[in-house]
Image (cartoon, rainbow, N blue to C red; front, side, top):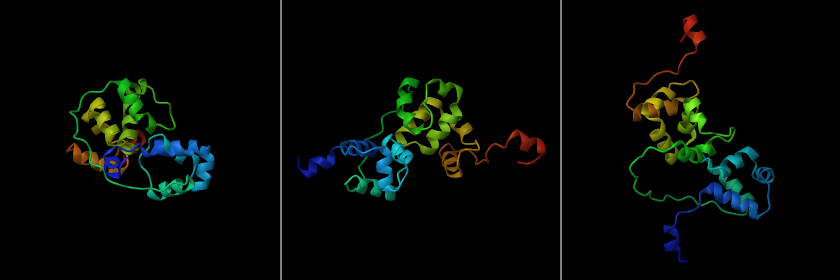
Length: 180
């Protein structure tokens, strides 16, 4: 295959590539992490679709696997019209963001702010767009006021949703004591 044609093909996600190279070398998560100077949970998150990579960590993982890191920009295909996703469609899309919890569809109903908080702070464009169409803008407005949402994420969504900037929710104890 010539280089011009190969540049048009989408590359496999980097997490998939890391896993495939690691398994081909017969390497465990712990062994790769030790060679790369990082932790096994970090390697696991990378392999599981977490896309908040650090270039330095990726270079060390690549070197430990005998590979080199190439970074390039590839134009996105045009966005399809947003449509409501079902919980069964959303679940596998965002599950990699919940490396510490086995996410189930009932979490969407029972803990929507917790799910949205994680997706808004750590999700990629596709994951966030799907969660936004599933939960709606009002749920996002409510979620970004939560204490666990970082200021950068809160400010971003306040701009996107044209909501006034607000401080995180204060606890019941702080309201009773007169502090906010």
